[in-house]
Length: 366
Image (cartoon, rainbow, N blue to C red; front, side, top):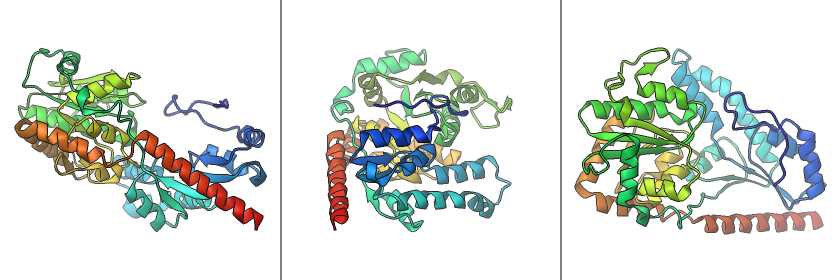
């Protein structure tokens, strides 16, 4: 691992900017990699594209985040007065940027099938589907335990021996595009209707404090108009923070009742896949990689961005789990089993790299 110094991102200081593109070029020239892979369409791409072709074997592009739709979606949500054609005009040049990077790479790797279709439709060449893998030895159904349930109840100050409270969890980065506002509002609606439940949100990020305020009924400095979001149930929404204990996180997921997810911009949805691998039924939006994770036998799906629809889907799934929880947990685990393990993903990716390097070598020889 070679670290290149760069300033922190203004929005999220945990991310840093690779502004020193000459340094990246020099590192590549010194290391002479077989595969030079671009993992960001920003300055990292500029640095990788500046590398001389003689200093690496093949160059690939890993499409991690759907930043184009994210920008457009956030613009339409936060500024509804902007017409959709204007939003598309603003974001259209970004697709030109993606095509320009991809044309100079031997393959563009994406983790979900819907991303393959979308990037191909936008003229991105050489798109290859490589789903992410699950750590099955960590995220497994037998991580479920009474102790795990008691730990979750204790986070909300509940009686740890209570068997009736529904435990809803969410996992992810607290960023604006993840739509934790929708998750919190939907849960508070369900809570206001009389459902005994707690919401435990694992993760950290720039929106965490704002989401805590939202759970208290504070929205942009004023009171929320959403039913149940007046702060009456704020104690039922807890934020344990980012967990480095993956076994502990798996225990929490396996011991909960439902996963609630709000982001319609996922390029894959790894946190959903890991939760389902633990046997956790999931509520997901009907757009993005999250929608591709949906399994009717173990989950519910709702119209992306619709808080009321999300609340209704959550209630439906909680009712189903109360009736037939064991069967639904087994169905969730079976659905997750269709995805590769981490080792399988690694082997498939190395096989692709090997093929690309051999193909490039043959072309150069010719």
